[in-house]
Length: 118
Image (cartoon, rainbow, N blue to C red; front, side, top):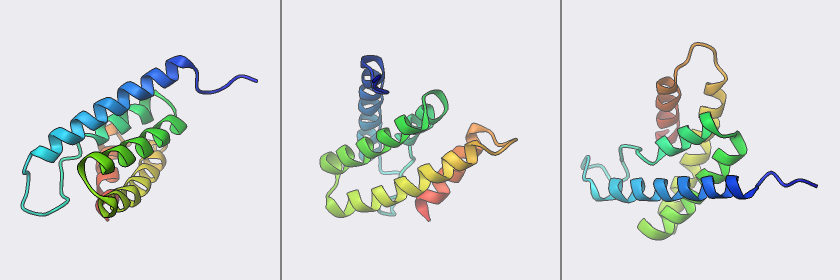
């Protein structure tokens, strides 16, 4: 039986997870607004990359890795739970929006950001 996660796929996911964590750390250092929890969403560009250039299961796994590791490194349990809820809803909306005709990657990104904040 052939596994979906070969060495190349694991290496790609590892690199994308590392990029997402670095972008998340950089974003954590930037005081964008005075509102707690509001960020630019730089790490979510990695999820968009995975969604468009890899497959949906890879994007889902990447979202869970990003949320879990970012929560351990930069936040606490409460921040991780909020991020997980926002990440699941956001990725679900982006997966559905990607299938819509006439919607660009920017539109998918905006819908994902709105869903995450909702």
